[in-house]
Image 1 (spheres, rainbow, N blue to C red):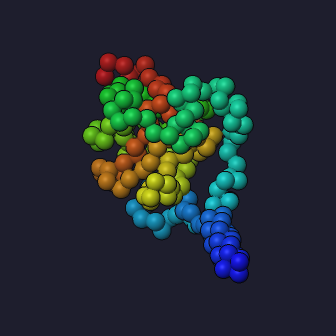
Image 2 (cartoon, rainbow, N blue to C red; image 1 turned 90 degrees about the horizontal axis):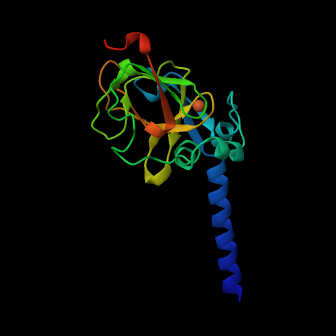
Length: 188
Ligand code: FE
């Protein structure tokens, strides 16, 4: 009997340790998207990020009504569309890529390039203020998640194997975006 009590207490302590370390875990939030290193990342507590206020804050039930189930899965549940399946992977037209959830300007066609990854790729966001970068430790990997700075929706990830001049590869789900074709430059 005594053994069982000790075992139960030990299990409780392990659980308590796990939950306390998870909630207080630090993550990194980028404050300058043009940096080559982590020195421009600001360390914040996980809880602070969750509470970060976006210009557009909607309840999940509202997003569910406004978005298609496929969009909701990627934008609000941090899903990933299938490789080579996205509508913008091979889009070479001139224009702006905007957030499918809120219309925020995210990327411009002149920074789009063919990375061969199977997802639309850009070497820079339209502006530093377009996106927020957050460290993502899901699936046993350490990656940097790209989020819409206006509504907090998931867009994709950024990697350090991109082309010049930034060396970055913003790997973005097509379904997270809409395309605003620049008709003035049409035909060029
Ligand atoms: Fe957005």
